[in-house]
Image (cartoon, rainbow over all chains, first blue to last red; front, side, top):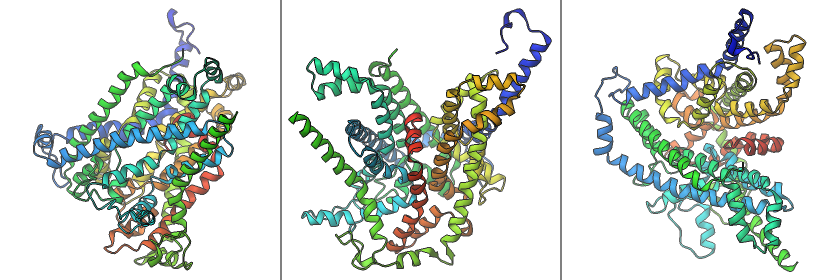
Length: 306
Length: 276
């Protein structure tokens, strides 16, 4: 705005104006800036430091070098188990959720009557899905004598041990996660509306069927939105806590012991703050690696119109 | 033409089927809250005998009532909504309109913090609040919302501010308005729809919060609705009827707010990709 004379050296008035603008800008973003230093930057640095200590809240932290990390990777059996479970959770729940969301969004994008009613119905589980209340409902209807088994009984299917067998428990949580596909669906729906109609019309003239249209027009055109949803869902899925804690309490036999739950127990039940900080940083690195892989991979499949 | 009709039919059938499956647990939940415990797993949705016993019994929890939990939750939620609107608005104006050195770097950092898993900060925060003797108070639950309300909200509002034509503030500037007057008199009123969207999200997220409430609140007189609900499963013999009834009540505020502002809500998710 007042930087036309930048190359010639500024007059006193302009310098004053520039300083006024700078300070003004910082004054307005100050609430966020303070929050950033107090609640993000400093805590991150401090937890990195703590991960090299044996801090337990009772005594001051003791520097122990990389012992936490060495223990995590070599002697901690729960870590390996939990990491495996978390990977399984993420790699099944995220694709399933996105495919489902895309499928429904595709149906809804076809100018159907009563679209907003359908949209509302499928969005409801996402709206309230994060609450304690919904976890309680889930815990009840997937109980051994819960409503789901009652319904299955109508069809002559024997009760399924949804939450009490190590075979099913993780999949029950995955199902709960997929059930909350509503917000990804709405983002897809908005993306679908952006695709120019004439692309489809031109393809139809050329004799392309709806399946070909989907794979050759919809998917490439939608790829930036798919990418966005993928990154978001991945980051959230790695941090899934509520369902593991409230619905299955990590059990049975640690079969739903998701990473965030392990971290919670180490930090706030065993008070091993140093060790838990190490776990947190490992999670950060894992999420970082997957996000980076996605960004690098996106060059090959995400199409941006220029 | 015929093929088209068939395809339409299939579309409607699938949509009806999926919305039915999605909404069915919620419908079941509603009816179940009026059932006697022995009737809970019965295959029919309709209660054999309607009862309000679950609501009466659930409302009182070991000497405390949900009246306390609701009062506490409403207080925290209102503080958070107000904090988000006041501070996120200011920060968004700073990023969206003002020019200052390092703006782009700070904005990039803001975007990165959106992706940061909370696990790497929450342990240090816990230690910090503990040292300041602020655990078992609402400060750890409210303070973050007075610091721009989180990167999501700043981003949402910045997007909106950028869409407002600059002529308006240029004209005001010529009339001698300073930054504050431009924000307060011109942008703040225009930003109202964006504030509504931000307010809705802030409300629902604060209302549904569980993790930080569980970490920081110990005394049961300070419990929130989420923590009140958790008390049910801490008991050896879970009383499902009252638990389902209280759970259902707890989601009603979010549902009402959603239905009143459905349009803003859906647009908010669509334009910023916020998780709902």
